[in-house]
Length: 118
Image (cartoon, rainbow, N blue to C red; front, top):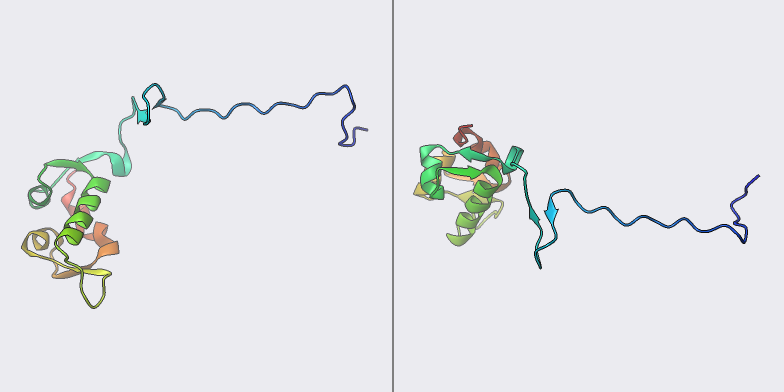
């Protein structure tokens, strides 16, 4: 029976080196750049409705980037509701996209989903 004790002649098994992530280019200093992958889901570039394209300044963007930019607009223009900062008060440009005067910022995708055309 082999208990768990090692005999003098046995060697310890060496742990293998951690595997590198697929698609990561380590040749560049200071950054990892993925190559050869197309976006899918939230990272896939989608065509935007005319109203959203006007707000974003581009006709095609990934969904995550649209959400980032809407957050940036809300923060930059200080559109948060002063009574409850979980809500934003729309200006004219944002109202064209959202369709409501105030909206819950964490439910932003509910209002934006109809503006992604693919």
